Length: 239
Image 1: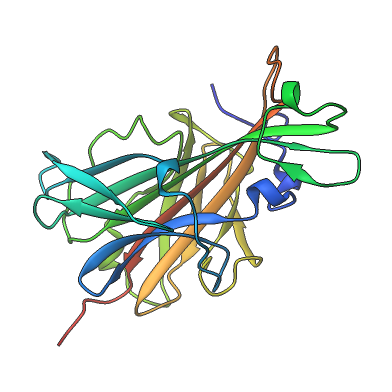
Image 2 (image 1 turned 90 degrees about the vertical axis):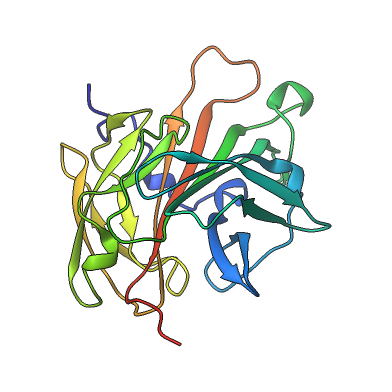
């Protein structure tokens, strides 16, 4: 089964306060930091919202990773340098009131709510060339590179496939440079969930996607808002 445009409310891309921020990781001062933001914005967040982190070596074997929860953000600490790293953040349920305010609760706790969504954010980082990607079922919205992104190079196209709940997702809009141009749409996935995205940067590339999926029979939300990013360096780092 493929997810088509009828199931993905892609017109709602970045339309709500609850969905206005993305998730990715960056190397800073020798640490892997979890970044919650929108473009150049790097916002404080409750580190308890990081709901999972997974690290793997080049063969796809899992590496233990801990989450260091600091005052206003989180830091990931794998036991050894990973080839692949994934992280998830559960931003909880959000409901919009009639006066357009967003409250971080389900609609059952927000009288008169006109819209409600549960927001989940994911990121996949590729650090080492030739890394074997393991199954990533825990990443509910996944931008999966179909070739090694570290071998493509700036100015060339990276083929990717977007999976929603493990199935190809058609009609998903991709942002090729979320960190620098978070509102500039680059391409849209085809009926098999595939697209080609231009590698823009010699440094960190953050490719992003976001979808809203209707939810039935829930007392608290009428949709799931999912964000996902794929990050990698456009060229190898040299001292």
